[in-house]
Length: 422
Image (cartoon, rainbow, N blue to C red):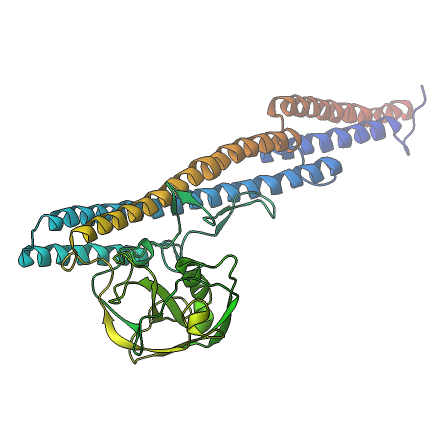
């Protein structure tokens, strides 16, 4: 047997194994204490990249779930308000039925009209005040109601859902996001908005266009040339729509009226036009009288009959929903108008409910499962298998202790040399 003092190879070997076992035990302790198999890129570089990507996706899905739930809450807020608007409109309908049976009792009609005005004021108040996170949900104009609202419902760009009412109808009635009484066709019996009426000559006719015609519309905001196509825009409704499409540029809004200036739906002869000064958002302009000029490149006898007219405001508009001045046939028209308003409200509620159920809640269910699967995959890659790692820790611990014992034995071997030197 060779005995050396300067180099104890047995001790060095035991030390090397003890250091390796100690490092492995330290790594096991790190994994067991953190719960993570990958604590740094050195543990598993490829696994770290994959798990970080999955973690990012999982966090994005969590935010998408929150966004989707916010969307559901926005829909619920809108529907709660619509439910109250529907209640007010049902009250208006009941009061109209009561008024139609008043048989000229002026006090009863005045009381009914007062309640109708209050109900429609409530409708406007709800439309003005209903909002969610700073966005108005039932107001006038793009961005002021829920139509066009875009919801980020995915973890990545472009994964959105839009609540769009463009071209949507319900029971034959066009559905929009604006729930003001005017938009519903049942505006208050009295309003402070100044309306433009024809002040000279006969009432302006909108009987149709036989050849292409250019209207020059000048209002409080500006002047706009509007071309009427005689092949498609031949009805009064089409002319009104074409003028109103430029209201934001001109400050002029058109209505169909009958000869006495009463705004539709009272009109039995909806062939006349009434104009109103409005702002860029389409709201009636109040205060000083506004001059409105509608001029045409055609003579009155050569087409629409609009010709050149100058209009100015004449004060408070009597409104469209007035049971005090209604005749027997007018009550039928009024009931039809409030029924149409109810259809518009119900149409919006139906579309909101379908969007909530079929888009938002369905998406929420889908991404919830998706997130679970992503997190399960990330856990498989990154998390520690505690049972398996505990086996490794115990093994490393025993080996470290054994190496330490053997190192002690190896260090005792040179003591034998002293026996030879005695």
